[in-house]
Amino acid sequence: MTATRRGRLAAGVALAGLALAGVTLFAVHQESARLDQELAAQVTLILERATPEEHQGHGHGFEARVVCAVEPFGMDPPDASSLVEVRRVYARHLCAIVGESRDWAMSVRASGPIAVRLGVPPRVEVPAAGPGYPERVRRLIPERYHDEAFAGFSDETAIYAARERFAHALDQR
Image (cartoon, rainbow, N blue to C red):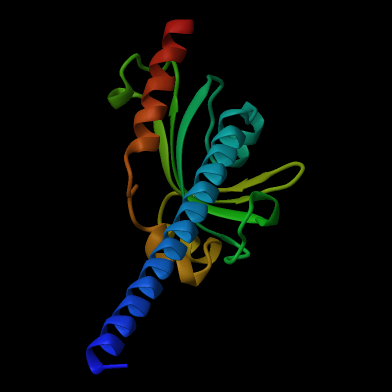
């Protein structure tokens, strides 16, 4: 076999390996994105279906319907690959109270990082606002997620969907 043929064969093997690695990374990313979507949907339902008493336990007091946007940034165990494996979700949330204002931008809202224990019943933990808030967030959220806990939404899709549900809920009143 000539050096040119060996070089072509090696290049072909390398390209095939790169293609396989790319497909594998794409599949892992797709699986991770799917799990994030499932977690976001689950936590959104938990927040939006919470009773007024449960919301008071989260540090919010109101009687009206709530519409939320949720973006997960972590979970326990961190290597979970399916919804049934996840025990806790760490996420950014933005919830608006329907009816306080007809305008989303002027509505009463609550936002920030939360920890949600999935289970029956689920348990939502929200760090209390006020002096010492950053330290309460750090106690609630594992250290590996601290940067994410203090970041804003990385994708506005969940917020746009919540705004649409907010407008629809106003139309239903």
